[in-house]
Length: 475
Image (cartoon, rainbow, N blue to C red):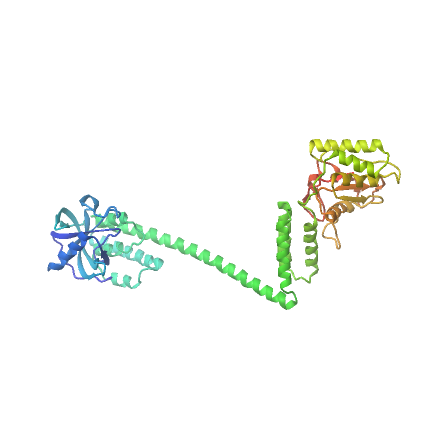
């Protein structure tokens, strides 16, 4: 289709006119066309009857117009010769046309259901020989880059174009292959009557197209590199699984990791705790199950999962039932029970646990601890007791950091994990018998636990994430 035939002599002619949709035909270019409109088929039939198989090809301004009139087509098109005609089964025709010269339509008339147009060749202001030679050389250089970048045009076309001497012919052949241009832009190049202007316009389009192709190539390269990276990671992960299997770890370890990930997702942790747990799980995934570090990380994740993040007991706020339980469990102690009921009544009214903490004072054996159990039963809270007698290490309250061998969370977190409830009744027994030494002051650490302004962000040294103790009832 890239053949350049012998030229007819450009002259004014009356020719059948074929309006084309979304196509601009340039001289020196062979193109297949499918003709389906009745008027166009009649025009082609007329051509077959003539000795001179020439036709005027003009682009439509709007491709959606089914039956275009004079105002719906451009005034400048290309005179072409019909090289081959094939009638298809649906009565439409496929023709192979070759553009010969540019022409202007001066008059259009309707004859027997098709258009006849009076055409005159479009004359062009030519370049000087020296200017033409240098500009053609620049155009060819740019077109070579375009062919290399586009990768949709045969490189052989460049060799064929090297023999062309006329700038107009070179411009037409190259302009016909500008695949990125719209119909309007291609038509504008076809209509220009100054060779230098046409050449500069085509050169500008080639430069922008080459830049566009280079950007696309860069993007494709980046995407390919990313895909290769993903494939490499997948391959290495598969190798790692095979190595783990050879070292003795089986599919159970994989299912164990998946199980931990599922538990983390369902635990209801705060976003900070969930991020921490997810990061530790990623580390665990990359470690050998037999390593000491894997055991430390696994223990840490287990502790994070064992702490109650969202599980709560349903609080019983019935004061009459509370009084009955207190009376059933303890005889006498009227003032103490009255104070306890007042405390519960205030909590019921404000529906918050923020506020004063009950402190029971008395000699051993008068029923302080059992009163705590009764309050827990009356309010339907889980009960836990922590004896502080002789405690002199701050780590008993806040836990040890994970850098130490055998480190554990503090007693507060351990007891919460034991009762598995976020709102239990926590009894701090023998609080007056705490002492302090060089390892720290546990009573100062206890302040963060009991202070309602601070305990919603209690920080255990082992967990390294904030935990909310504001729903715990302390006695």
